[in-house]
Image (cartoon, rainbow, N blue to C red; front, side, top):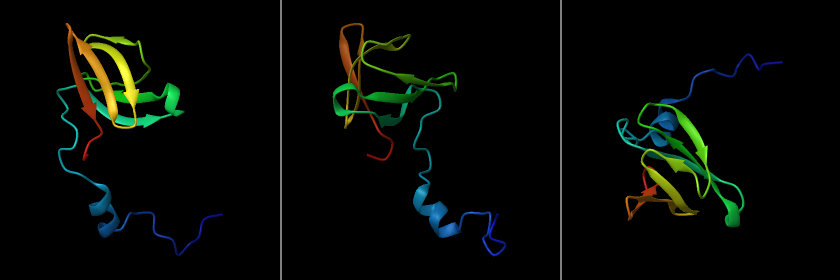
Length: 90
């Protein structure tokens, strides 16, 4: 049962602390989250199309191949060059 005195909205202070304006560039590949055990992490990414996808090391994307995922972020190989995606706000 719900507590009738509990408000369903988030307080302005909490929302302000939890929200980062323009943290995700909507036209690029973006890293949204990391999870799983350290030796086989999974990354949650947002594709430029707006879709989200869970990826692991070895996953091929149109933007490149995932070559590593660690606590700092995701590493892509794009045509022989490596690019690191960091978590928004880091």
